[in-house]
Length: 431
Image 1 (cartoon, rainbow, N blue to C red):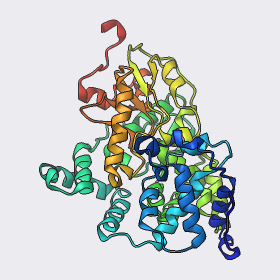
Image 2: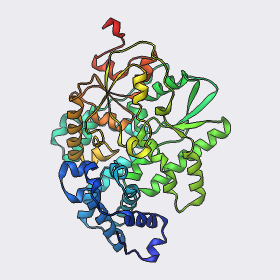
Image 3: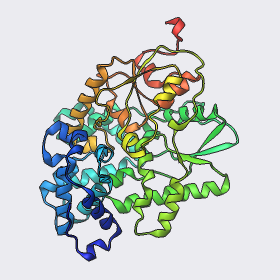
Image 4: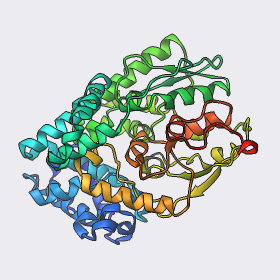
């Protein structure tokens, strides 16, 4: 498609990259079938094609965005199913990222919206504050029905989340090979057992998992809220933490067990298009990124007759674009089931379920309807956001892939299976 950017606009590396992707779009509409909001709402403005037209107009005019444009861009989940489907190679991520940053810098949101978004960016990126928020949500849970929409959704979700407790076995030494762990933020509060399971799985393969000190959040939450400056701060902190630790004890890689975080980390270099030194350091950091889906399978210690619905997060399908872990689960003895419409987002999308609760809830209902159609015992995923969003009394237990692998290889049963009183630890022969 034709563009009309001025030369001074194109002097910005991020605008130039967005313009390149706008030119590549031929408006064929193939992306619409992969867009969760378009499939759900049927509004062209809530499709990638419609949003691209609005983003082009907004960026070219370089003026205050309209409320309509902001509404429909805010409704984008950044699942990037459109990027995978596009036959023209349009990198939609570059367009939506630039547009969100532009809106953040040039649009005055209502006060309540600003406060909510700022609260999310501050609280959910800091484990200590997340713990306080979860306790507060538990206190206000009885009053949830009297609260306005998004605040009601936040209290409901917060009160449903549990604060996890580490087992005494926590991180264990696996051998002389070392992998650094970027623990992130929310996951270490509500599900620390996931990284513990990862440490056990790696230890059996002769690898020690070593948490990075002072790394903090990966920056994905701030980035998806349009906070580019804050996202850079978090990214620099993570990169510096790894560089410092790697000098002291050499690591063969760095791991984050949440694919939403890992997909953002993979894109770190794009945050620093205007900072060549940091871009080089980001590229070096990303080159060390590994994921558990690439591990070599081990034979299971005890066979288990368990039907597992594999929910592949959008961040893995369309961001990391790597193995989904299904082969590992099959090798571990599980019956792995494909979920119908598995390409459509579940509605979690980081902070999306807090900012767009009605759409997120509708997408969750659609996902769970498809899950129930295959009659699983458990849902397995590899992203904490999806895990938390799909969990509930109306769903089968939802666990991380690493927890199932640890269980199959002799570790304890996943917490959520024990908590729901399902499956437990007995072998097939005892069931």
